[in-house]
Image 1 (cartoon, one colour):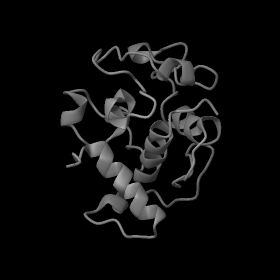
Image 2 (cartoon, rainbow, N blue to C red; image 1 turned 90 degrees about the vertical axis):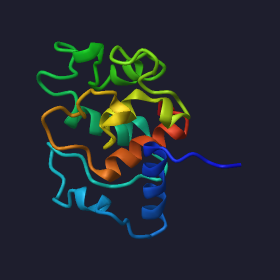
Image 3 (cartoon, rainbow, N blue to C red; image 1 turned 120 degrees about the horizontal axis):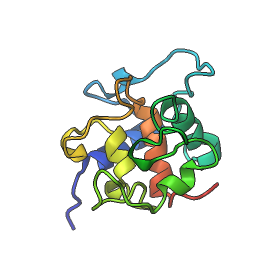
Image 4 (tube, rainbow, N blue to C red; image 1 turned 135 degrees about the horizontal axis):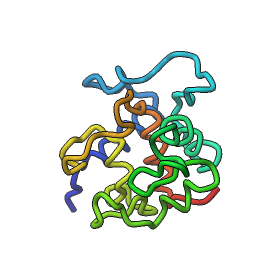
Length: 157
């Protein structure tokens, strides 16, 4: 059986290479932010078994739930990514920008609009700008952590 290679599958393979101690080629690792984490920046680590509360929510809080973006006040695209609201706003909910996708499809990274929006593939976003808008992209390890959480069923943990 031939497996299709999608941008999200490539991110998952990059995550596997990191976990196995392998090197990433083609400049993928060049995007990693090796500065010491601060209150304004989540750690740039790849988590084997990510927890939503411990590993995913801090990324969303610090990178997405900011003034003018995905807060309860502004809720751009109808999306609130603040602590206490993010999970229910994401998992199993249809995207307002691309209704053929859900924001997070548990177990299915390729059907998850969130992963398309934070990923590097412009075509996968169907003409929508990469998120976070106007800011540095999430690091490869942060994206891979979110991909792992989704592929592990997007548990509320």
